[in-house]
Amino acid sequence: MAGWSGRLREWGRRVAGAHGPERETLLLIAKSTLAATLAWFAAKDLLHAQSPAFAPFSAVLIMNVTVYQSIAQSLRYVAAVVTGVAVQAALGFLTGTDPVTFVLVAAIALTIGQWKALGAQRSQVATAAFFAFSTYVSATGNTERATQLGQIILLVLIGCSLGLLVNVVLVPPLRYRSAEYGIRALAGALETLLTDMGPAMRDGEFAEEHARHWRAQSDHAQALVTQARSGLQSAEESVPFNPRRLLPQHRGRTSFANYRAVLDALERAAYQLASLTRSLERWREEERDDSYRRFLRCHGTFLGSVEEIVRVLAQLDEEHLSDQATRLCELADEMQRQLRAVTEQAESDGLPLGDPARPYGVLVVEANRLTEEFQYTCDVLHTHVQGGPRPEA
Image 1 (cartoon, rainbow, N blue to C red):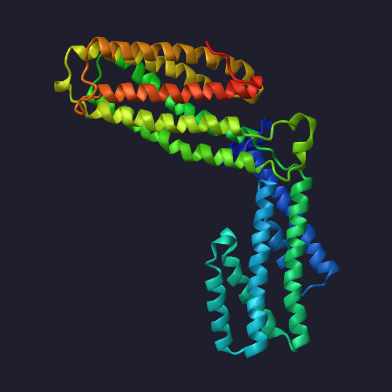
Image 2: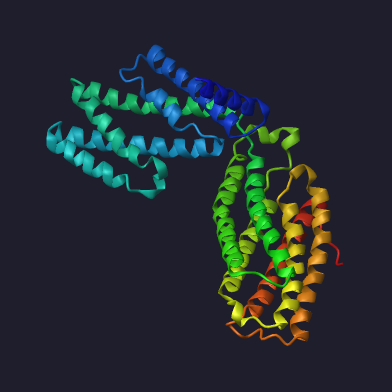
């Protein structure tokens, strides 16, 4: 009991302390409860429906964190229910209520339920058809049957309408922070990787177990790309049809193009670092000669300059984006200088860049690609903040 009490208090503190998943969950439960209650009252007490549960069930089913998703799900759900009821009505009035009719209803409804346009609501075609069949069988005449089938659709429309109304009116969230959180997590993973790689390469030595560890870290970073994209999509979907976007504090914050540019660059950087770590992992110690140490030191310094950029991106914040964009431009200039040093070092030492057995060529190529990606990202953020392209350095 003490453990449960402590966890409950901690959960309460997180709910009261800041916006986060705990508060969103609590808000969604509250809105779903209110929508279900209103729908039940409308169906049971106002319409005196025989199956009032359809209304609250529909209200809760389409309730979503974002208004956009609620509207999308409600349209698909209504389409699925209307289709299922229509299948039952057509076959019921044509062939009656014998078992053969049920077989045909089930087969047709389940076939239509494979239609991908209905999305997550595809299974509701068959569900609605089965409930409609039960209602149809229990009715005593064709007029009552038609009325009951129409009432099912009416209850679904009432439930969806009340669910949408409650979701729109009661604090629909604008999930700007979701975009930032995903990017921060991905950038933080890349920062950790670069923090490990840079010093080891600047020392001119690394063991095989280091390369394997870096490979595992790069794999973890790539796995975070999906999570970051989900957060960005959630943020983008929280804006359409949301009345809060019209408030003064939210005007001008309806585009996520800058976040998408940053995420795209981080995703490509994650793959490029993965390619780099794979090459280092395959580079056996006996294949290394004295010429590689100077190059590794130079490349480790370059990775340090990339690390500084990633560190800023790991702290990305809309409220401080102007200062962060300026800092990123300064760091991008330093990264360009370090890239030139890497290229000049490889040329002066006459390293075998075309030898596939050695990673020199891959290191140089990936250094150029990383520089291009982060330079582009810095330019995009600068343009977003300043309203114009960055002047040439």
